[in-house]
Length: 614
Image (spheres, helix red, strand yellow):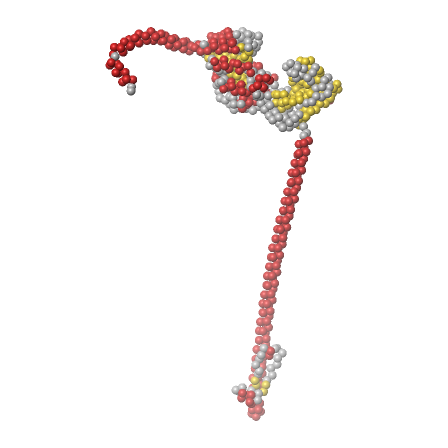
């Protein structure tokens, strides 16, 4: 039932009560309504006042990829703010969380995923966090492009880049653009913390150069000490001078205020103050929200160069720069104390040499290694193959070869070590074959070290694919089987061809023989028929000739008889009667038709004449 219908009976039954309740409600509501109207008016006035203030956007940019940055995440979440975390992908620890906690000071991959899941931006910071302006252009492009490719492969959306150590030039800016980034972050080119007093108060929105975004100096750097008031003054001054964009760059969250970082209490104080400045048109946004732009496809960096024999760049150490061999780096354990010295001459076969003098070995000593880069100096290798490392050395103590490997994401990790080589005063060659290279390995770097105080001098490095005799034997057996099988198959094929050819030849010969026999039979039949026809024709011709001859003889005989009769008719009557006898010729038989037969007249007697019916 509608409310009006349900209330109608009450209005009819208790009109006075309802009227009194209305008066009381009006009395109570009017003061409250006036009080609530005042804050509403104040909010409208504050909004108009904030709109009149210049807009300032603040971005917190975390660099270095350090694990202690995870402490900032709950603080940003508490105040509903987001930041940008620039991650060097090659330094991200991809081991187990516990192992990473023991052995790495960098973010784990799980940490980075957690940061992204909280809505924070993940940006690029190069693969190995090295200064880009001091390396060849191809190597710098690998650092920028491959870092972005790694992040995209992990499922992140990197659109903004921070230059390692804030060092850049136009060439590096161009590479950043080519690798698909929408911006590049510099530092130290805005006024703040008492530095760069002639610089601008804030970056423009959008920035005047998206690939060199200007910022104040890094937090707690170049002898500055940042307290909450330092952050507040930079933001306030920016708004007082027309507003714009302020990017605070930090690297760590420390127990207390620290170099390049801050503490959790200071960060909490700054974010709390910023939250209260929203009404003054001061906002906190990540870098990608200010820059904008699409997520561009990943761009692969240049392929690593293939090194000719002996497989190590500058193997003889003859090329040097600033007192160190080119394409080599001096490496020492964090707890080790050692000095390095370069000799342009004095190595074996006219090569140069590098001497390491270890005064405190620590956990790993010190050594000269091939530069652990992405493709300019480090020797490339293929997974699954063993390699033969080599060098010439002099050592005051037994030493061994240590080998490091580069992973598919560009990270360098310790891999393995050789047995110890004996101490040697003269030059001596050391050679050791590694195990099969693990999957995902793209390059190696190796050197000689000693876990004791001493002196090691090395020169003339080499790296080549190891000869695997077991593999050779297996390949030999396999080749024999293949060749034998091929020969057997070839012989079988030839035999089949021979048999087929023989069968075809026999069939052809049989067919030809049948044709020849048929032709001979036909010829014989034709000859027989021709001979029979010839004989028949000759017999017919002979018969015709005999018949003609017989006819001619008969005619001649009849002519003679007629002549004889005519002569007899002119003789004496007596003699005519006596001689008047009928001459009868015997019938001509088949035997009488002989050409040699002579017809002789026979004189018939009277009785014979009567019997013949003359």
